[in-house]
Length: 93
Image 1 (cartoon, rainbow, N blue to C red):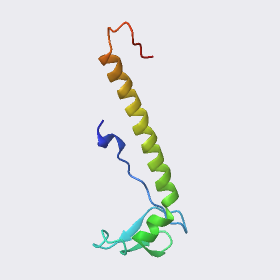
Image 2 (cartoon, rainbow, N blue to C red):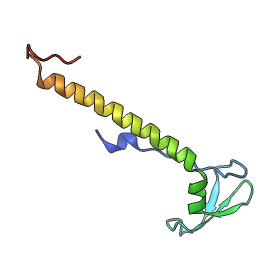
Image 3 (cartoon, rainbow, N blue to C red):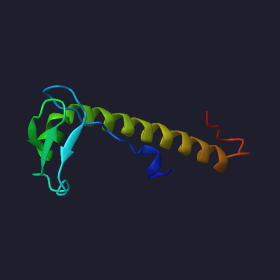
Image 4 (cartoon, rainbow, N blue to C red):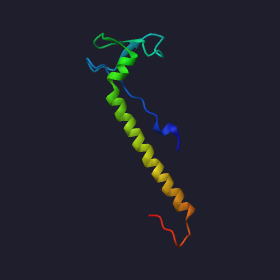
């Protein structure tokens, strides 16, 4: 299982107008960096924008978690079948 399979880009949207285009300075790595919405000129911090989009972020994280669990279950089943192949006393369905 590669972690690259579970990488996502989550589009953040302005809670005021729903636009996803923002302007920001070179200090975007800082949580308190100012971000300006192109659509409505609302200025907020990066931290506030992430917090306002937390429901969408949580939903994506849940989907990624479910995919990881499903993939792990499939891999475990495959490995168990492989390990016990030919054994008359153990059958994995």
